[in-house]
Image (tube, rainbow, N blue to C red):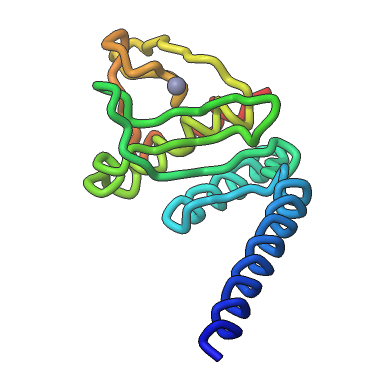
Length: 164
Ligand SMILES: [Zn+2]
């Protein structure tokens, strides 16, 4: 009796293994372009769509193949990244420490900057206005201009971000 039970266990384990392998194969095939967006980022991804639509820019995350993650970024002074990859989704990564300590506008600035790269294909722009403020959300963060993203400057900076 002990023996037959043991065989059954082995058989079950083997069956699970086969099923896991099959589902693994079908998953990787079906989900090759599946996108993931961290729950905390979703609100900001949604806002980006709304602000784009106001300016006649259609943001389609499926078409742009953009995923979003919050992770610890260990490179000094880097708080966000957009990784372009022809074989995988383009990936926005936001630094967890920065995220946990940021204000709503700081988070929006960071996500919109990375989506500027990943969705709008924008490069960095470090131009300053007469007061030394960055004219674009797409600043590299180097000291050539000062970031001044407030409720007062937001509209104008978003106009610049989405301009074609
Ligand atoms: Zn950048």
